[in-house]
Structures are given as C-alpha cells and as structure tokens.
Image (cartoon, rainbow, N blue to C red; front, side, top):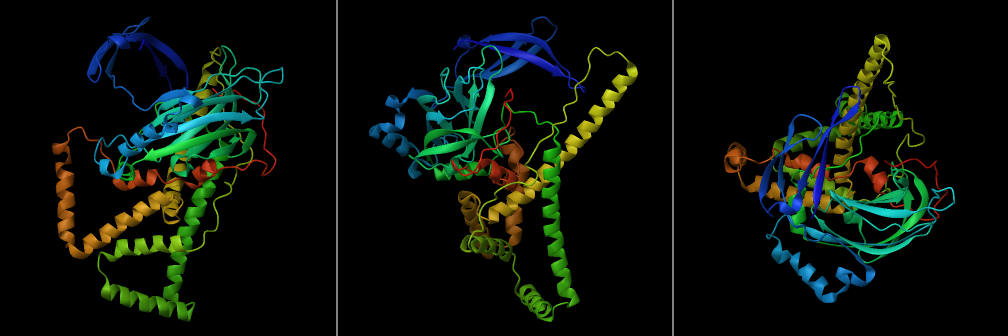
Length: 466
C-alpha cells in the first residue's frame, strides 16, 4: 500500500470544471478494519476535506497467468465450492460468490495507430472492482492469457470487458466493449464475443475470447436481490442525445398504448360490442367477486408467471427503435467572450438543455420501470422470475392461513421499529430493489450476445474513449 492522491473538483451551472485542491493520505500508516476519521488540508487553497476511511482486506481479487489459475486446482476448487455451498448460506452474507475470468485473446481489432496496428489492453469491470491486462504492442491479434478473479457482491451484476488502445500520455482509444450478465455465464466454456460500440447497440470491429466460471450461493444471492444495489463510484456522465430522447419517447408510447388498449378492452366489455365477450366477462366478474379472497391477488400473479413460462417464447428483443445514428448536443462555451448578452444566451441554452435532460431521464425511468415489470413475467431472467414465483407462493399461503389484519400489524410494527433496531439502516423498498435487477428492453439489447459472422459490422470512426 502506498500514497492515496485525492483531488477535489467543482462544477458550476455552466458545466465549468475547476480543480479546487489536492491532498494525500498515507494508506500504509492507517490501521486495518478500523474507521479512521481524517481532516486533510487542501493544497493551494483554503479549506479541508473531512474523510472517513476504513481499510478492509479484499479477498478474492487477483490477477494471474493461465498456469496459476485458482479453479484449475481440484482441491482449491472443492474448497471454494464448499465455501458457497447451501450449508454455509447464513455465513458472511456479503460474500455471495466468486467469478473467474480467463482473458485469452482478441482477433481482428481496429487499427488505432498510423502504422495500421494497435497497442491493445483489456479492462474488466465488475461493480466497483476494476482490473486490467498488460498491454501488447503493435498487434491487432493480442494474446493476453491472463486469469482474473473477482468477489461477487451481487449475482445480478454485469461484467464489462472493454478493449483500449494505449496511447502514451494521452487518453486510451476505444477499440470495443461487451457486457455480460453474470447469470448468463456458461461455466468452463470458451466463448467468442463480438465487440460492440460504446452504446452496446451495434457491432464493432473484432472479437474477444473469454472463458468464465461463476460459483455462488443461491440463498445469499436471493436475499441480496431485495436490498439496494451498490452504487458505481465511477460512472460516465450521460449527454443529451436526440437518439436516446426519441427512443425513450417511443418506449413510453408503447407502454401508454398497452395501458390504453387494456382500458379500451375493459370498456368494450361493458358496452356489449361483442355479446359472447361481454357475457363471459360478466360471469367472470360475478364468480370472482362472490368468491374473492385476498390471497387470490398473489395467486393470480403466480398463475400469470406460470402461463408465460409454459407458452412458447417469441424470441428476444432484437433491436431498439432509433438505434441508427446519434447526435449528441454538445454546447461549447466560449470562455473568452465577455459580452453579457452572449453569456445570457449561453445560460439560457444550458437551462433548456438541463430541462430536456431531466425530461429524458424521467422518461427513461418510467419506461424502464414498465419494461422491468413485463420482463419479470416474461422470464427474461429465469433466476428472478423463479424467485418471484417462490415469493408469490409464500404470499398466497400466508394470506390464506393468516388474517390480513395480522399481516398489516406485523408489517407496521416492523416499519415503526426499523430505525430503533438499526438507526443507520438505509431506507429502501424491497419491490423496487427487486425490479432494479430485472433488465429493461434497452439493457436486453446491450447484453445480447452477437454471433461472429452474423452480418456486416456497423463500423464507426475511431473516437476517444475518455
């Protein structure tokens, strides 16, 4: 452990960024597994940074060569499997599993240098864990043959593998990317993944060969599903995009039309446009109301899940409308211009951009929420849909045998005493936490695996990744 360099930056309403100061922390001097409250004065400016740092040894993260592969040793593999077996389901609830990724090679990468070659390296990200391979110079077909081991904190995380071109002191150039949900991993198989563009919606140039193994405890993974997702420390700031805004409007339109068609269908039942349909709806209404019990609500949802499981699937989402072409609204401000009228005009542009960006984010959140509900019943992620079946079955049995007022009483007591039992508990909604693990239609496209040679790659001009 060495010195931790910290920079403090500020951003104003005009998107100006300025470095306010820096400070350093000697990590080696801090005790392990202990909360250290530090007040660090900032260099080159007034003020100090108040930080709470806890050093915890991270087990499971490693980088090795193929000859030192952890899961290749039968005794070590047996020991790891035992650690995540069902009989250890109640031990160390945060230690859910272990992921091993063999980064073998890449083929036919994009030439990033004037010499017609690239200096590729591979960056792997799982949650907030980031590891990377060494750089292989002057080649379009690198062979890394390295093994990466990650601790799994949430089995619904997505492994992001990005290939970059090293460019000296300049930011690395983007050469392709793939996103792989952990639950879609086929253990022990060497898979060839077609690299995609930054948006993960179109094929890029080149393929990468990976071999992955995932070992996890299903009980711990299920419990973790109903807790808040870990926030990413490093996230790309999304720019306002006409393509994304148009796509979100189309997604909202589809959801609105589905609701509207349902309402119109129910309305037609009362207007006797179709005699047999209205008569059948009337009989169903009488029988349902006369025999209705509260436990029938989760039972109906359970039957809907079973119905979607048994019926033939129509295939996965193959694309997202509006995925062709992209226009990012990048407003460049002229810092040297001192005319007040032009500054006021630029401020109004940023104000309108912020409003449109807020609308875009709201549309995406609402559309994603509706799509996640649909994809839960469509068995997009079998693990989550099966978990929903178990929860609904338990809810049906509970409501059948226990009076509803007792259930409300238990829920209220738990809600009122939650802060008393754990004052530092983070407020969360288990249902929303569960739905946050279900992919939206856009994410289904991003996570879809492209087959090599399935069609011409949609190549774009090489752009800077960072």
